Structures are given as C-alpha cells and as structure tokens.
Length: 280
Ligand code: URA
Image (cartoon, rainbow, N blue to C red; front, side, top):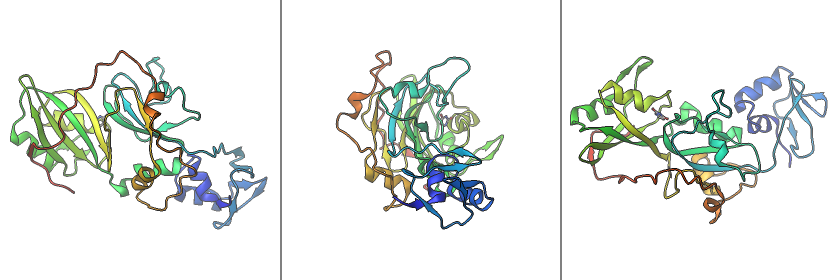
C-alpha cells in the first residue's frame, strides 16, 4: 500500500514525522536509489527500498503493541552493561523487535508499553499530548495532608518545579501508607523525586495507568497485546492507521513467560481516598 514517505520513516522508529520531513527536504532519503525531496512523495513499504543516509529502513509489516506488567528488577533499556535482566527478556515469543515507550526505573513495576511503531511511540511521548500516568506508591510510615498538598501543587526539583499533579491517599496500613500520584510530565525518576522533596520514603512504586489504559489484572512479568481501539485511543486519533494491529487475544497473557519468582503484586484500591489533587 502506498504511504507518505515521512510516515514510513517515522513508523520505522528513526525519528518523528516532522523530523522525517526535514530529512526528505535535505535530500537524505531515497526510494529505490532515487533521491526524493518532495514532501508529498509516496512509497510502498512492502515493495520499495527506502534509504535514509544510504541505510535501508527496516520496516516490519506487522505493528505490535504490547502492555507488559513490568516486575521490579528489570531494566527498560535494550541492553545493559551490568548484565541485568531486560524487560524484553519477558517477551520471548514476540515475533519482532519492540522497544519500550518511555522508561520505568529498574525497581519500578507496573504498566509498560512496548511497540515497533515508532510513530505511535513518538506521539505518546510527545509533551504536547500530556498523557497522564498514574502511579501507586507505598511509602514508609504515615503521610500527612500537607505532604499530599505540596506534591499536588508542585514541588521544586533540581530541574525545576513540577506541574500540578493529582495526589490521593489510597490506603493506610500499620507500617505503610499507599498514595496515588497522577502526573503528565515524564521527567527522570519524577515520582521518587517528588516524594523525596516532601520527605516521603518510597518503598514500592507501581504504574497502574497510562492515559485511559489501566494495568488491570495482568500478573507481574505477563503481557498482552493491545486492541485496535486501545491503540487508537492512546494515539488520540480515532483513525490512526496501525497497520494490521496484532490485536488483543484472550490467550495473550498465557503466552508470556511465567517467571515464577515474583511475589504476587499487592493490589491497592484505586479510589476512595482523600484527594489533595487537581486535574490539569
Ligand atoms: N517516576 C519514577 O520516579 N520512576 C519511574 O520509574 C516512573 C516514574
């Protein structure tokens, strides 16, 4: 199927659609050996050889969109000099190379998206879309309203003030409290640093929501494919062309590894707590 060249390049994960246009205008892109500088140019990713700076694009016909429940103790990078386990180790039966949409810390658990659709990943991560992510945080001891309020209003970090967040007390226990924190920024270790800024010590951090998508009942280390509707919803575009999405299958979770050595994740309740937050 013929598609716009900039779309093919961004879908291959090289760069965003806008930056792909620049590559075309700069004469760095060729279709079957012929340099193309027209932005309206089209090619067939299944039949044509498209090169950027002389290197052929690797285009896979099938787009994969995966929701993994990342266990703690896995890194989201695609390789690690220290030999630590990689999240992609948990996707042994996945037919194509996929990479994480954003990152979670080594010890953070929960909802992680992986895909081979670079354009989709770029959309989700673009600050313009301000997709809200929600975390459940187990903190040592008791939290007080003032701490929740400060986190909700914004705290000063070394890279600047955080934007307003939605922060709730979810559950109170003997030794620990659980709070929920919903943010739309994606700064490094943001939730941990926000907690540190109000003197809260994080015992456990779990992402339970990404935009409209909930982690649901997947166990740690398991994954499932997203449905077409979920892919489009997250893209913020009801007509997003996801190229024959590998759609959600009832047995998808069963296909994933059964790591066996994870503790069953505690499932804190999602709502009903004291709210100190404001929605953006
Ligand atoms: N905030 C953090 O501090 N760590 C994560 O992994 C994600 C969000």
